[in-house]
Picture 1 (cartoon, rainbow, N blue to C red):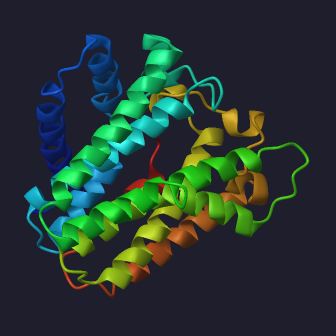
Picture 2: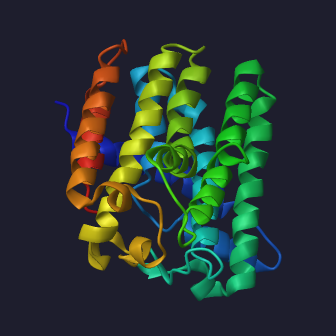
Length: 293
């Protein structure tokens, strides 16, 4: 019988085994490079992106072996971005997932190099996959676009830009930050699963991925106000402190909660048009909406 938590843990375990096996093969000189890479890559977390990739693969009846390399590359990109986000020049956070940030454990210079190395290793995986054929090359290209100057990096730049004191902001600005900074790396696992399935249900999956990314960032903004360090494993209250453009800043806390619930309903509506077993994806929407960490 289907159980959401059991299924989530199955996906999580499958990915962790794959990531651990890959990470143990990393032989670097000096050893501190591999150490610092593994420190962040294997530091647990929700693994929402690889779990989402595996879940979408199941919905589309795509073999897990097809999606796992891309799930790992995606998680490497996500981890590199977190390492760099935590640096003093960016969000200046001393903790990540309840442990000292990479730069606190290994120093700023080593943390920068660990992030660079994870990004390059992710693209090495994509290059290897691209050799298998056109759809694999398309999936790799899509991931590159989601991570680069038209994706996550653009969102991070916009996030910094709109944090400037006295800068006028709008809902359009907020959604731009959402779509790029967070949304692109949550769209990637959904869209790539479809691309590898010969674009089956692509438009619906694309719409679902975009809305889910928006929902995830909305709940992240809310948790920065209502959450606690024990659950989140990172500092809270930093958005207001750094004048970040968030849904709480724009709509207030209660308004942000209402909009997150509306976004969750929109996600569910999109799943109605997808042919396949979407029970886990439906429950995942509720999990993201109500998460405490």
